[in-house]
Amino acid sequence: MPYLEISKNNFFYNHKIITKAITPKNSEKIAIVLKDNAYGHGITEVATLAKEVGIQTAFVKNIQEALSIAPLFKNITILYPNSLPNQSALKSALNIPHIAFCVPSLESLQDYPANTSIELKIDSGMHRNGITKEQLHEALTIIQAHNLRLKGIFTHNGYGDDLSSAFYAQNIEFLEIKKEALKLCAHFKIPRPRFHSLSSSGAMRASAFNATLPQELQDDLFRIGIAFYGYNSGSLEIPKLKPIASLFANKISTLKLEKGASIGYSGVSTLKTNGSISTYDIGYGDGLFRLREGMELYTAEGYRILPRASMDCISVESDTPKVCVFNDVRAFANAFKTIPYEILTHLHAYIPRIIV
Ligand SMILES: *Cc1c(COP(=O)(O)O)cnc(C)c1O
Image 1 (cartoon, rainbow, N blue to C red):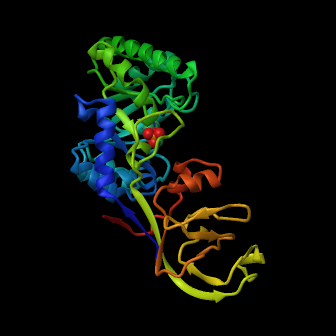
Image 2 (image 1 turned 135 degrees about the vertical axis):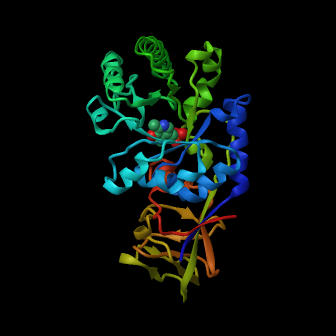
Image 3 (image 1 turned 90 degrees about the vertical axis):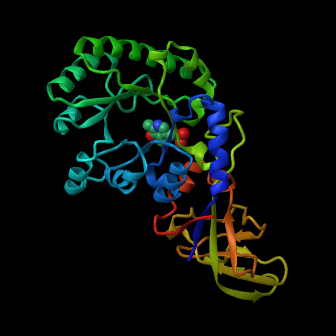
């Protein structure tokens, strides 16, 4: 069976680097994003590590994820409450006061009973989810009429990786949104909600700007995902982090083959010298992307992984009992022309996660 080792030391190291780079004086402003099974790393395992370093606020994808880590955090927000509907899970979550629900539209404000904690999502220029600044007045009218608890007002700056003016324009737009929200909250006698807008790359770039704002206009939280897992989301120069996950697979069988032998589906790999080829127990059925002809990837030990990958196994130029398929997923991401996020989140939840 394949397994993922999660390095506690690397997680602690990343936490230290992230806090120092973003908010050295107020480490409680660092929130962790644990959505999608903690980006494939195992939500309970990563949540446990996050608790150990004192993180109090987490963001998750759905209700089930929120329930699974409810005792570990002071604040949990569900980013996509409707992504896995389940009435009894919803009922349980509504009864836990420190779980909040993201509301991305005026209509979805109608979904929740009185006293539910919500975080209102505002579109500040990414044009994905959220109400407009102009709808804030109506939203607060509904929130007050329905007796909802407005825990937060937030946006998502989608330009953190881009050296374009759009990143700054979105920050300025959110500043305007915050000013408008404060005016409206005073009018409706609603306590000031918490504000947040920045993910890993954005927070690394704009936390200094944030700290120059008057206290009440500052973001109260930074929603950090990929940096905790040890990667920078873009190509921008930001502090060096350490990947926390290593994927291991165990040997199924070994064959001694002669030069010229072809291996696997359609025999696309052939041996240049006599040697041993082994199969290991991870394949694209377990969520590892399917290596195919034209791709060159090596295990962490330097053994070549031979195309094509199968559903339940890969062939490797090795005969060791196990191999480390990766301890840094960037080579896979590059080979598949994608980003570490996508490779990691695909790893099936049933693969054991072991904290080391
Ligand atoms: C995923 C996500 C984040 C985290 O982004 P990273 O680039 O992984 O830091 C932050 N905010 C929201 C709303 C998200 O969906």
